[in-house]
Length: 454
Image (tube, rainbow, N blue to C red; front, side, top):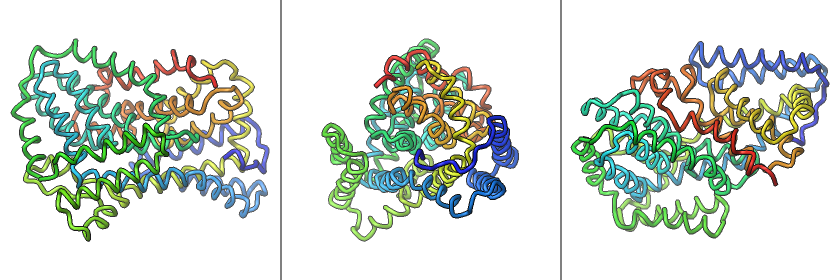
């Protein structure tokens, strides 16, 4: 959005007050009225248009700024489309089911909390969705914890930690794609770079969960239901691994994320037709509407029913609205004035990274929405990183470390409300044990400066 020129020069105090007012309005709608984020963001757009017109900015200029803002999301939009197709094609090829079965096979070992953390991480990577992982496998694991008299709070903390680790590291994740796209970083380069802070947080969390774990696990019988139901779908086959291998090969050869995911989707669809006997005429419908699970075990159906272009419309609409909102913040001069003030005060690398993390956390706390945390923070700090000689990868990593993983720790946030509802465990109960989510922003603030310079 750097190409959008401010057509008004408000005061710093006025800009902060006006931006804070909009944030409060969005927060009231999302938290107080439990409204989907699209509506309050659209209301914010109306307010900014009225503000611009009041200050003699022509409507064509405002419209042009919205178009430029939304246009900056086109890379993400096309990537989201192909991710929807990839998920549905990986379902019918058996790739995601075989990854689930592999993960479930390790739950019968000891170190229960640590294994719960690792398992939800594996499934989170394969699904690319922290909330889906929590609402399906997470619910089952919490039931197992109750059956073996383990701590519900620690188990919930391990589920949330693993689910958001998987979400953060998955090329299928919308937040991961959004964080990389918003600052112009290749998806796989972004994932590689965030591993510098994510892997240490994972290791420390795994050790902590292992230390807290009971001596033995009795979860095998419950897990067997999932494995048998997955096997009974007829989706799991030797060829199920091939789409994943193709994606890895494309990554090694440094193909773009869009091309890599597209090739893997096509390969998966071919094997679904040739090996899993899906009719050719059914595949386009599955690409659009996603795959619907049809096993006799409802929890597995909930795991498998996902994907498709249609499933990405919610996220795409939100991204377009949020970036249009950002374009108006630029053309009205509100964000440029705040940016200029920040640039004069932020000089040291660590202070820039810490400010980025605190801003992302603040948006999560005040608005309760992780997409906006990534979008608004990314737009606010992009110029600051460029002028300070810091890499774009450092910014996209910080957005994930302090934006994506903090949302489930806020009781009134979208993720916090959802997780507390599906698990039946209050956010403040599992929060002390969500080690990965707590560690990620700390590690990025303490050590992120070492790998931030160009």
